[in-house]
Image 1 (cartoon, rainbow, N blue to C red):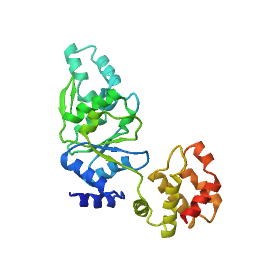
Image 2 (image 1 turned 60 degrees about the vertical axis):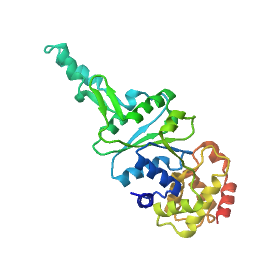
Image 3 (image 1 turned 135 degrees about the vertical axis):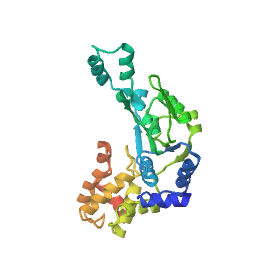
Image 4 (image 1 turned 30 degrees about the horizontal axis):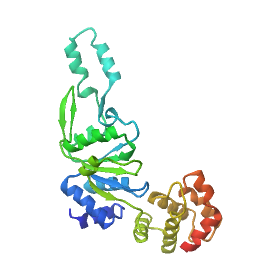
Length: 290
């Protein structure tokens, strides 16, 4: 699949992708390299992995990163409770070696995302979401897996990928990522879309929206993003805003200030932002968008 075909296939899944980003995804697929997507929260980085899995007709396996994430939560762990029950059941018979061989077998192995990703018959999309939230130690550990796509389990041996997963990593800029990780990945920065792209996204996801209202929604949201906010509304919030307006029968943002202010619950997600973006401000932005 060339870059143009990939862009078309992603659009058919409701994701309007820029030429630069489509090329980055295409190269990652062609070269078999992980792709690091960096950008603000809400710009659609995670959605790229979901759409790519749909385009490739394969499974999406997601590893959500967070502070304190370790190997047992990301790769595998043993079902200790089940092991204990088995040990108790075998207490009256069988040698220690036989019991050990049984409890450290596939029957008692709990797959976590990284192990699951390399054991698929068909290459899945492995999403390592918000890698910058994990500790640097885990990032270093992840590098080894991304280099060889194999995992060693002391009791079972080395498990090598049956098919090399398509790896997408996302980062929101919580902390700086290591040079070693960046060197192993292709890179794309995902920003908020321009007006025409975001309008295309809205029409793709909400085809019932009227042209005038669609233009007002995009103008309003893009102006709102320029205000001093704790949490800038992303594409998902824009779509929620549009759905709320359509559901309430709104055809013009300037028609009812009370309804418009009420729908700000879809765009503003902190108490401070709700307090600071007053009715006067929303009316100013709506008037500008109209």
